[in-house]
Length: 67
Image (cartoon, rainbow, N blue to C red; front, side, top):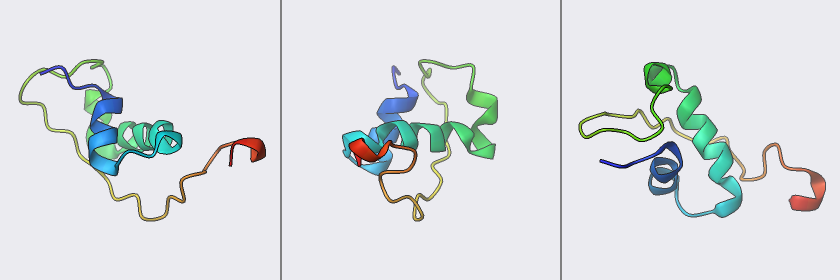
């Protein structure tokens, strides 16, 4: 109990801080997770689908000065 979207993304995809917003978005946009979007803090027993992030280079959507 007590997991949030960002803590799940951090555990699932690793600890690159710049990538955390994109990884969190990836989790939230997964078709299997649409029904979970009302949760900010997950109760025990909720299963979150973790899509593969192969095509993500770690700098998607960042301004040039942040890359």
